[in-house]
Amino acid sequence: MANEDPLLKEVDQDLAEERQWEMFRKHGPAVIGAAAAVVVGVGAWQFWTARQDADAKRLALEFKAAVETLADDEAAGRQAMAAIAEESAGGYGVLSRFYRAASFGQAGERDAAISAYRQIYNDNAAPRQLRELARIRAAYFALDSGRDAVLEHLADLAETGGAYSYHANEIAGIAALEEQDYETALAMFRALSIDPAAPASVRSRAEDFAALADAAKAGVNITGEARLEDVLDAVGDGLMDETAPPEDVGPDPDDPAAAAPENPAAGSEPAATDDDAADAAPQESGNQQ
Image 1 (cartoon, rainbow, N blue to C red):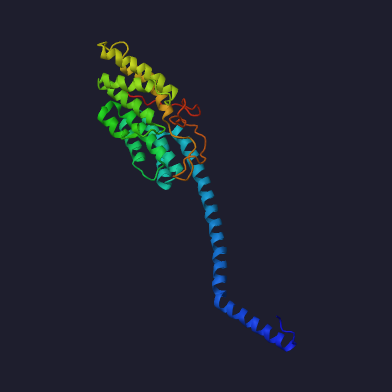
Image 2: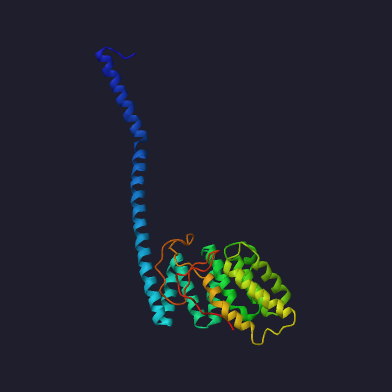
């Protein structure tokens, strides 16, 4: 019950003020420090965000300029792409390495293309999907080096059940066909041709390859008028389109869906999906004879 005596009320008030001052002296510095830390933290976060946005915009402009340079001057464009890749470990860096590797493939520089794709899939900082995609591209360019080389690049990609596992099985089947292991090739292509989960384009090509392997197994000379090289040449562009780097890769290495400028240069391709190839980018002609 509150004291009614004015003198006692004044004493109570003084005691309350003393307790408040004692609590402030005890906890005040911590409270002030915490508030200051919040203010500094918010300011630092806003500064960091602004820097990230500025860096992303600058890299976007540099990447766009490098793409245009690559179309006009191959050597200078590759150098510009390499510079971006060295500066950024994120989306634009990985995408720049893909453009550089694709330019080697388009120019018929098979070993250089394989080496460039190998660097991408050995980089654990790159998104897993892009590392898998680089394995597909390296394996394709390694077809002339024999089945062992192809399987080395593919690793266990054909068994993962991921977005590129069907293309990995297709390339492995082609390697078996070129190795004249027609029985293995026939089994692989028949399985692909009836797999409802495989992209329609892969199933369609698998039917053609299965017929070719079946004919070769029966003793038909497939190196004659209907040479295996001709078949590879006919399907190569489609295969390369479907196993192409995404056009939209942002600065976060763990998020390949961030925005990137539209691809106007030859040698780049649309993102691979479980459907038919996307139609947003020009084809790369890197087929091996």
